[in-house]
Length: 164
Image (spheres, rainbow, N blue to C red):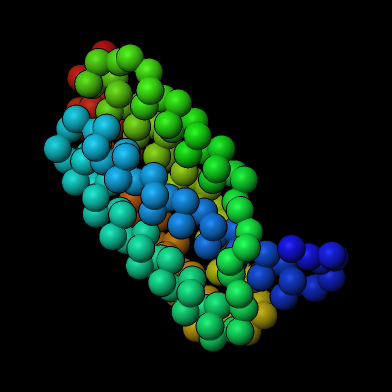
């Protein structure tokens, strides 16, 4: 991808490519997670987050176009690993309640990765004076944080209790 990272601009571009790959991988994984979820609220949450993730991909494409960057051609290895772990978990034999708790755990790992990535990218955009990119990245960051909160609320309010 890069011979050498020489500037914050180079690093920002690398972060955007990584997020773009991660989100595209998640667009493919979320329908599987939704179908594995037994709890209706959890399944609906995954379905809603799929729509949000598709919008997040579009935002990244908007940033890429505005900055004349090609965001393709990179594979986010971290998301690849997080999704592989989630798929491994989904292949386990588990009660419905335990599977739902496991799906939330896997999803929160993904959300935390995305929160970190978007927070970093938004800060870089601000430092570089890319105000529109920073606003779009912060919008996605807020969505990811809200998704994490919703997952946490589901787990703590009743899903983990049912899994016991």
